[in-house]
Length: 142
Image (tube, rainbow, N blue to C red):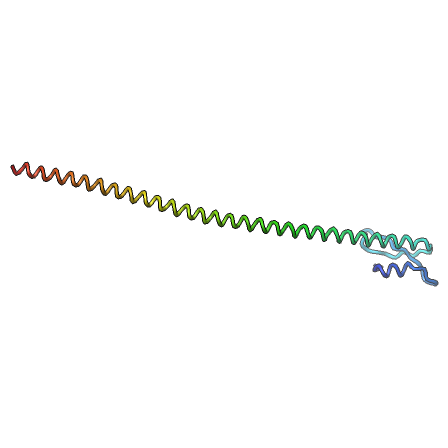
């Protein structure tokens, strides 16, 4: 038989014609069982056991509440850290994209410069060839 705290106290009271009882713990220490007894001194033991069980329950409740609060705090901290890491990754990605774009522009500039230099060199060579042809034509006409 499982009793609430108020039922256990009522059962422990010494009333005429009512069988007295004590509350004992069963194997899991969470259930209360009534065991018949006739000694009035056992009422004190009953109160002590009930108080101890209630205190134990209260302590466990407090421990679980503290643990839950700590877990929530840890989750908030992790969320902040993940948010900061995500922002840093996003910034790095933007920086990398900007660096790649700048590098691409530099490479394109180098290619343009090389093409311009090649074009200028070819024009100079063509001018030399053209001048040589003019000189050759003039000397063959004389």
